[in-house]
Image 1 (tube, rainbow, N blue to C red):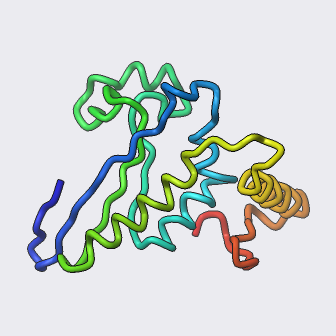
Image 2: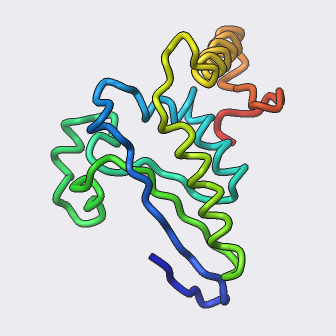
Length: 154
């Protein structure tokens, strides 16, 4: 889906299906989000796109999801679980931005045996750092992949 904005920029989005039908027990949402959403936020910064998890099963509160499923603005809850990627920018660059973001997301949608999952181990390390920081009274912080400490709300 593409829309031309008043400022001449193009807004375009794609959907990447999450293979929950083939791997119903695998935690793709946790893998994509990371500790306090840090993985998703980092992917957005790196790819210069907006990345959202949408569809059935995208909400933490399943009762609330069922309640609002048919309400306007929540139509995505009628669709299978997917990643919605949106980019805004120069029409000559937008396909490149979306393609890059799609590759990054798809890399995390390949199930990995837990003992070999380097990505999950890094997420657990980050979570331990966040919890340690919180216990010291420093608020929520996380270490991004470059080793920089940043506020979780960033």
